[in-house]
Image (cartoon, rainbow, N blue to C red):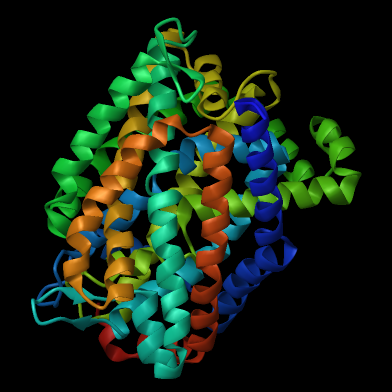
Length: 482
């Protein structure tokens, strides 16, 4: 068996596992959980969106924690705003058609209630160790909220969270996205290459991989505070830059937005000429609709991580005593990530028709959309997109290092085990560029799904506590005075 046959076989095995994990049962579980929580909390993602925006930028005074609420949100956003917003949206639409964006937004809307619940539980059940470090996240609200007899479920979550960090969202997908974007800009024809693992790899990949690995090592050694400081500078700046360019694209193509929206809605239900090829490959309208839903929800969860259980690990470190307040701040992560940024990316891709062009994969789809839709020289659009992706992905690497460290610390029962793990994580970043794109995203999807299951179980089990205290809070005089 040659290298090509081996990689093809591995790819098929991973695809079958991914299809099983992200089957209809898990998709329905995630969406129905968000719907259930939205109903129990009376649509708080609509009614209290304004207050959430206020809390997001107005830090609480006198709270207990390691970083500000805004710092915690930026740390969470650093882990969510990444390749999922640029590459993930593109791969979802390429695989499921324009309708995938519709299901991504639907999942995000209800996911805001799920993300709120995660932030709420993170503060309610967190604890502080002997060294003064805040400990919180799904493993703690499973153990303390559901009881000691459910500690095995907390361990399962921590194990899959560790795998997501080191094999999925945290390392391989991000560094792969970074090196692909830089290579597409500086060496698109791979004319300056070296043979590695039987594949021709551009020297740009090698050099970029080394630089990012070194930068990662320099930041993560400083722990949550240094990660938070870097994220508070990089995330807002790059998010604003990306949004401005996406808005410029949409404004320049405003006349095509209505037809693109129509295409997205029709595609969500397996209809329309745009998805005829997908419909034929998937075996009809129902198959095309399932493909759109599966890809949209899976990539949406990958991007905003609502229900995954990662964001509450960062939320637990926030300097606050107010569970509801931090829940609302956490909720904004999903809104910014998917409802705003992913929607802009998806609309740009559908307007340009880049998703259906032959030979375009991953970041190349989004790059083509920006080059086609912006009134700048193609090199300018490509450079801006490359820059955004590099910084988005880099901060995601940083955020997920913290998440996976917390998972490992919980599994080992000691923070001392984390020191050597930082170097293992750096090593994973180093080898990530040499993984194939399809394998990288499939592995990430698999671990995402497995990580979500124990977290969703815990949220549903504790939903009564969340709904009761939340509804009482919004009726209280203390809230009405704020």
